[in-house]
Image (cartoon, rainbow over all chains, first blue to last red; front, side, top):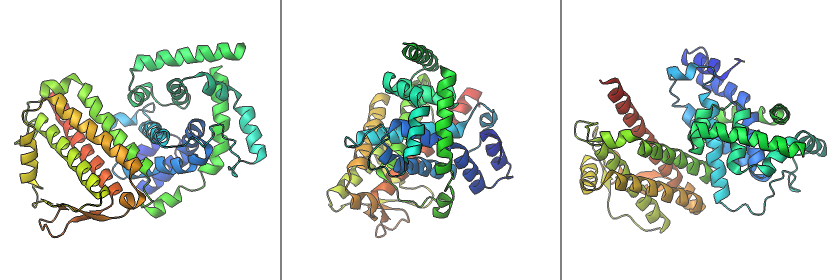
Length: 184
Length: 207
């Protein structure tokens, strides 16, 4: 497997990697990230459907993907940015439709995929994330998740329709606030 | 703190690797033929809406609106063309929702498309301001988003005849589902957005 998104895109553009193989590598590279974003944003029963939606959108776009020179910079990450943007959009659709019966805590009784062991691990590993989810606004949480997963600030700003300095400002604020909360 | 939250994120992602890595292959087998859900259509429409809003917010579009982008149309005309299709797609899907019949057909001609219909629609919008044209694009897209989430399953997914004849014969209408029609509208938008972006780039290069 190639070691970075830029390498996969370049290999595909140079026909060293087929479109399908490149898609598969991108999927393997980013599926856990997309799943993580979704689990932290929507109720568990909807995650699988929305995961499929995000990759369906990307699959269709991938068929006509245009490789531009500016995408070659290691920090560009156009696919990760596209996936982040698409997660935002499918989540918006999710929130527009009725999901009042679903709990966001990811421990829904109907969820048979989470074994007790995995559930405990989530809680244990997720204290900081849970705190962030509790104290951040939706936008702040999106910025935090995007930043720690490497989405470029420019693309975060574009997706959330705010300025790039606002992204950085909000990120610094939320990190400071979280630190205070955890110290308290 | 940032390090800790990043570690937690990485642990979460590792936990998902097993789930997530299981099946990229099914996308490839299906070749994009997976059932399109309303959420997908909504997301695609949201993407085009965001792109139009970005264009609207740029100072450039106001300055360039009267420049010729094709041999016949200015940038503003082209946007009026997009707006006219926005409204047409909404009307056609709403007619399908009412389960009513269409009493007209938009007929394409080889190479030039539905030139007569396009010219008439652009002509109707000639006196409108750029803002009014963008308003029509945005409200049409938002209405399609509402429809994507509200349409009954049979209208959303079942192919039916729409009053567009691609092969010049009005007796052979376009047969597709409302979902496919809305995705086609997104492709149409992206086609023109790319064209406008190319136009802007060549303007900036002074060519």
